[in-house]
Image (tube, rainbow, N blue to C red; front, side, top):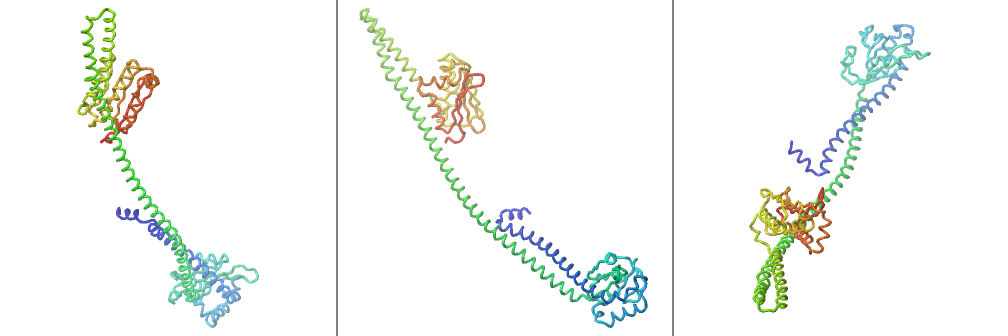
Length: 462
């Protein structure tokens, strides 16, 4: 059954219409054909019966007027009726007859054994007493029709009212059986022609509809094939774009790593070069102080302070641009170190929440991005929010890595406007995050403060 259903669903629209429409059209053709054949038979039999009844009435009515005043026919009328049905051409057509009175009593019949007998009144006899001519192909199964059934030929059973000449009142009913060989042949031919006409009409309608559906089906199949080809091309293009995007993100990550490497080299060069030379100069200045006069000693002291301030500034810069080796470390570990360093430098507490068990393996570019994000976020919170209720949260939400740095300062407007005097910290963070295909956001928190957040799709940075 499932196989048939599957084959049906996979079949073309024209095939489905041919099968389903063929069944519907066949059922409709049978119903309509049967109805048309029945109406043709009914009409032909009625017209044939009316013509025969009118012909019979011209013979029987004059001989049956005694029934207006009596329930019996006169012997003369009996003999006249027998001669009509045996000695005229009418006898060749009508094989038997019965004349009925009310309550179903036979007062005359071609079979004299039925005279005086009473039978149940059927619907045809009742309709004839109401003045209607009724006819049907004889069933001949009733007891009164035993003689007719013995003939073995198709008969048309006709009930016709006998009317009083001057008043038109029904005074009796004549039932007669006419040979129906020609009628049956005509009916068979009429049915055959009506069935042929109905079948031809329905076949023509079915073919026209099937042609329309077949054309539409071919168009749909062609469009479906074209759509499948377009989908395949789009899928190929999407895969190509995804590969290009991953390559761009990988290149951006490598550029970011190279940038950090350059910064580390700059920091090391500052620490090992100018800082050491300035330190040496400071030492030499200390040795010159005893040999100078008071004014010169004072000038030398000012120069020494300037040199030492430069040394501290260079060391501070070198520490800020230098990046520790985080490639092999867990993000939770270096975020905790950043919070501790920030606490030591600023004297403000940082609440760190890191869901280490949910974190997948991360590459160096992602870890570098996390490091710089926390570093810049805490620095901004200290500068613009006075370090109030600083917090860092790192974890996995579905298939995304989420990192946020929050505070309870005046809000993001101060941080954005305040970044203009400090350089491109937030702008650099946005570029770094978006280069890895992530989302960067800064927004106000309910109840005051700022939330700096980033999201990275896990598994796309290879």
